[in-house]
Length: 441
Image 1 (cartoon, rainbow, N blue to C red):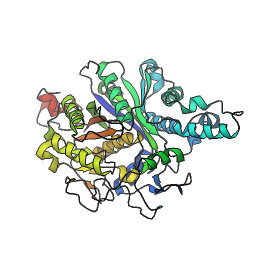
Image 2: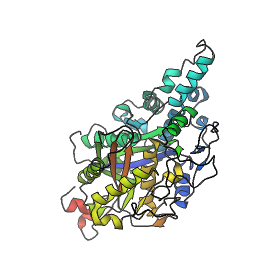
Image 3: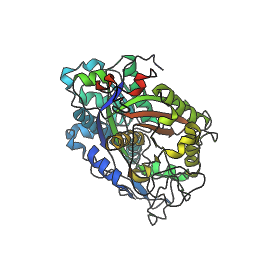
């Protein structure tokens, strides 16, 4: 990792395109109420498959953000990313014309990028004997296009990268952005993730791999079921989310609202299998401990764990074991929840939903529920906030993102001004926390 300075990294803007709405306020409102976006797929025929459910983005029109010609040259995942980045920039209140655009970075994660369009173009070209091929095919399908199009729309000239490491791509993109700011390379970074995997070929591949929860052609609707004894697989989703990550002093100087502080992260690899996590959980645990270490937190300081919570038998049990090993006895006092029962598994975009939802949870001091958890499992015996959300004291949270191929990333996010020492004269300094007073930050 890049050598770090004492710079602090804060979130000053957020934008989201999700199955639960295309504004942060609507996304949070429905998520916190316990609404689910999981429904029978409407965008293609699912009759060949054992499953038919997904969490689709329903109310998104790219022309609300882009000119028609510009939008038509982008794949759906890119459209999602550009729209959420524009919303995040607007939400942050940043005046880009007053900033050094050459130092503002872009760090975007995606698992499969424009694969949806690649399948569509292949089918169309084959049908026409390859005589008529869309000239924008390459730009619409390459993962690189996502970060490039965000840069073009926002007019940013700093480091511009697309990361693709599976489901944890967004957490990686956010972690890399954190490093850029901590090292002094950038004072401001647009970071996030996007995914549009809802295509019959992708669905068929997931179905063939027995990853999707069988739903008897939509007859069973309470899916997925993270941490439930009857959990049987995942449901696909789509969408995007972007953050404005900023140096604390830069944000304070311009009077920006600060949603939360990113205090650390950890990244490890199982080096075990492309499709199965290492059953020991050692590398998941090491990622979490690295996040705690870089954040200078004790395990007992964690107030909440936003879980990966895919809804599969093996992975949910393994994640529960990881939380117990890392937090010890404190694990039984810490609420844990998964958003995937409400939003489906949107590959890389799930990481964006997790961070945005956790930042809003800290702002409102309220934890959204883990839906569809009705049958307790002895192997998953933590507090998963089942059924209904609840008020809670939230200063520090770990966000788990455990991806395909054994890529394990944990982010350490804290509420702004968490742990203010009110009896100290330093408490008058915005964002000054107890950890600074005891010399561990």
